[in-house]
Length: 480
Ligand code: NAD
View (cartoon, rainbow, N blue to C red):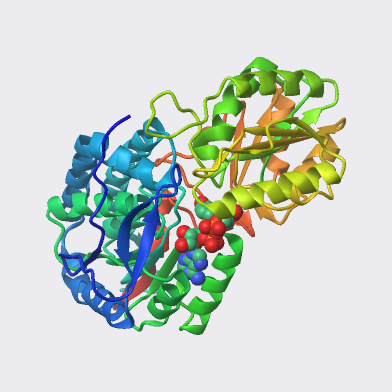
């Protein structure tokens, strides 16, 4: 076990770190023990106004820097995150629960994300259009939209802020971010790296508070021109309405999923099991692209389930600070309660509990890795994102039927398939309704590739060459 000093926690407004013990406070808990880690100040409306005003005041000068100057700061911050990863990773584990090796990987990907954004910011090209009118120049410019309000969740406490801040800054925008109140230290460490890399004051501002109060205040603030949110579909819908009412403000919405996994009759079962087990139980299943609904061809179902359960039974559940741990606690007690509810409902609907299904101990939010088989389509877990350490299976016998099942829900974030036939790959690529499709693998998220959903999983891409678009407006300029 490592000994880690957690806190103090505060805001970062206009280039200053604000730690205050007076005024309204929240508390941050260790999900492995239930102990309070540190108090967290709760922003007042005046503090939110200061953060928005700082982002607004910093915008003209940040926009006026060259893309290369902005890029250098992001690259320096990326290097600092890598240098500090061994110190930051245990803090992330203490507040969020995931094993420290997973926290460290997340920090490395956050640094890579800053690097990618630093590079792409230098390639925000406009264009020149052959004019249809004599003696006229027609140009297209792409310009930063303005100060951004960003809201990020607790499951990827460094990566989600890095995606939003990296792309916004590289595009020339300034930011007010409200990271999740459950996991403030990781987000603050990312912003500390930017501060130490020489970020001008006011370009990024960090606040915490009651989520509904902060988002409604910031979205309505006249300085804010763009909203970006990652979290549940219900909250995303609410924020998109607020953004519309506040003046048709632009939004990027990365919302929930319920990723289907299609194991076709020609699948390599060993590959499927060795790939899917670590992916399913990464961060205790609390990942929006976690493989969730396992549709297995009837001829392979029982063999797949036996092998999957055997591999799962070798995973160690424990405190994420212990290097032997594969699965940490769930992030909060809402998640363990949701697991109880969904698994009990599936079993009452006729599913078989192959393994797990119970909380572990009475301290912290530990839950057994769980496999539930032959789950009827009517069970809640087949329809609501479980966001936990549970794999649910159902059988199928025709490709048409399984594609229908995969597309049945109103979500479309990630989907996966295992098959060795090229004709199946072609069909799945065309017909599965998802923003991300992994075939014979689950690695669908990379800084270099666009990440985002379809249907009620949201809109707008993060990453890839598309990742700058949400932070840019397009202007056509004609010169006679
Ligand atoms: P929740 O919807 O209460 O919170 C999810 C995140 O949204 C939290 O970080 C929270 O601070 C933030 N949030 C909530 N209300 C907000 C508001 N009005 N304004 C701004 N931010 C707000 O859910 P939860 O109980 O923490 O998690 C449950 C569900 O959330 C999961 O089942 C999952 O579907 C979804 N979730 C999705 C992601 C993702 O990456 N897409 C991440 C975390 C949670």
